Length: 151
Length: 411
Image (cartoon, rainbow over the protein chains, first blue to last red):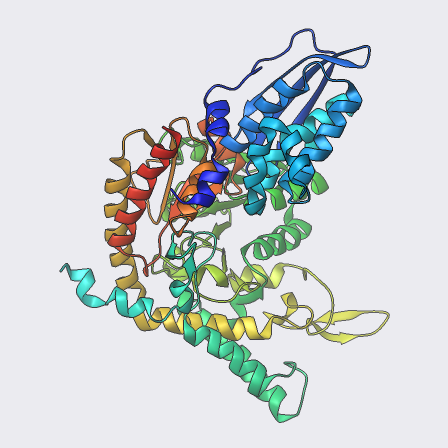
């Protein structure tokens, strides 16, 4: 496999694609948003249980490529327990990472497992795949009930 | 060597298409996205250059030499389209921006003249969005109703259902000749015959057909037919709407502007004769001339030869790719051409597209602007291989091996 391709499809991504975490409808959710990527027709739903400004629980369902599914899966495992503000900050950093705007090595390292998405910046067509779940989470948090689209 | 291979040398043909020499990720391009757009032969590229460098001027309005020469070249291209389709007259050939523009033109003009509340327009389940949305817009504007011919699990139109949809309310039928997402070749001749038995006109979306099959509008007897230049080795931004003269004469203009008028006063404007009535504004002159050249190129190779070679290549690809374990072909019609759509168990088409791209292979992944087809098969997307006569069996073999690599990545 080419190095660039290996950078994109790292083991963590393949693993989360195969067995996505928090992949279910959260019945007790009090926030929800639907995300849509018109380019590929992918849909996903993000469910949030927000109590006293803290994300007590989060889940997602939907259909997508390995990049979008693993991104959603990793996102849910990292956001759980964070405050609304922390979640939003992480979204901003993640977005900067996949669009190639996060250059500082320490900053990248501070993202932990999310750093595996650094390879996505080399694939402009796939940036939307990686960020769809995050945009949808942001909309769910800010109670924007409308559909999220990456267009 | 088989009969069709003797007729033309694919390696020689490939030399006519400079973009086929491009390297992708350091590997030779294997271009299998021909249903999206085809590459252009040198002759077409040169022709556009020649227009801009030696003829450039506006058409139909200058007495100066360049304008006359440009007008002659533009109208010569119309003659070429007429001959290509075997239309009766150049009055039946309207230049548009492409298939989408052609369908919108007809929906607008035909709608204004003939569509009333409660009227019905029949399309099929496998239409491209460009043959769905213009009719939906028309229905919204007029109170007409859209009726949809269902398809079976193989991706074929259900002909009995089609017949049962027809009634005195049906004012127009618009169907695709070859499906861009399934490859199904529809029985358009039978559809047209059934429609004409009830005096219903038919539009054929030939965007995926004109480059693959010899086509004769006289023999087909379709009332309207649309296609795009860029899918038949011509430039983008140019297409054709063919219409029988007696229909076009009855239809009001689509857009108003220069070139489509006979005389203008503030009290009354009279319209130019066919086909100019439907060509408002300065057209894509270079594109039209380029399209004429593309049709010359195709005529030089001969569509019969192209068709025979592509049929053999498609049969080979269909057999080779369908044999791959955990590959699910989408659309298994008895009569299929050019397009092989598929999914791989557990792997999203986008991931297939990215991994194949690394091998230099260009395929399309997504819903192919046919979301109802995706819904019908219960999938979000497919990976699509679409062939042209410049593709080879070696490219198919290489692609089959690359698909196996996709499984290696995903385990």
